[in-house]
Amino acid sequence: MRKPIIAGNWKMNKTPKETKQLLEELKPLVKGAKPTVVVCVPAVDIQAAVRATKGTAIKVGAQNVHFKESGAYTGELSAQMLVECGVKYVIIGHSERRQYFGETDQTVNLRALAAVRAGLTPIICVGEKKEEREAGYTNALVTYQTLIALEGMSESEVKSCVIAYEPVWAIGTGLTATDEQANETIGVIRSAIAAKYGKRIGNAIRIQYGGSMNPKNVKGLMAQPHIDGGLIGGASLKAEDFAKVVNYED
Ligand code: 13P
Image 1: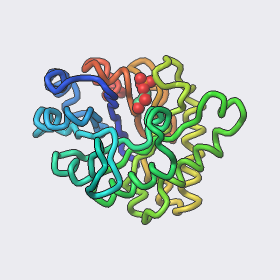
Image 2 (image 1 turned 135 degrees about the horizontal axis):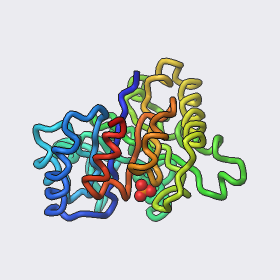
Image 3 (image 1 turned 90 degrees about the vertical axis):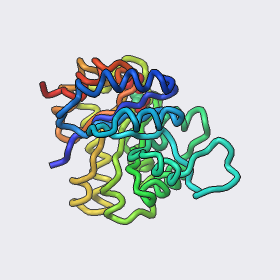
Image 4 (image 1 turned 120 degrees about the vertical axis):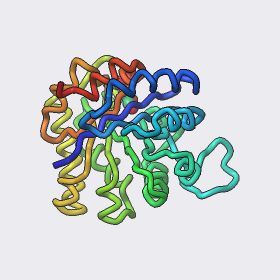
């Protein structure tokens, strides 16, 4: 059985002060929650988030990581820096980074390798654009994105990763993939991993859905057999909404 994982992606929202406020509100609402709960916060909010979640089950994640250990890479953060700050998870290859910051499947792979080797759990994002779905490329595309991202990892490293299937057309648009669409594409990703790394790994790896997931649609999505959780944008910015997503079984 795979343990569900609900992660908030705050994107470029919340100051350190607001981070503390939001997490203080969230803590009592998600106490004893069944899924793994993660908040992926802006880099400058990491310390406030780690402090606020101390002694709770909430894990703190970052939104990016560089692949080199150190050096002349202005504006970047190394995996070790994140680890020392108390970060446990890191989003890698979000479509916004691919779209606005030149992230490629190859840099996603390098970042994911650096993350797992430092002991961070990467949340690797894959997903198709609207025109790619309409042209019938979704399955080939998510397979390619996933396998390239995992290239060079051992079976146990692959197993420790989280994949987030986020159809680009569903992000921040209010459009969600239907439960069946999301399940089908996540099934394709799982099969691709199983074909390359074996059934055991394919069955064990956790794959989330992301894209306008909210308190209203979470239950239907989570009832699908391949969907192990969610990567939540907008609905993670209000404690009450995020808690409702986390507690989708209640
Ligand atoms: P929304 O939930 O705002 O659509 O964002 C999804 C997302 O990009 C999470 O990484």
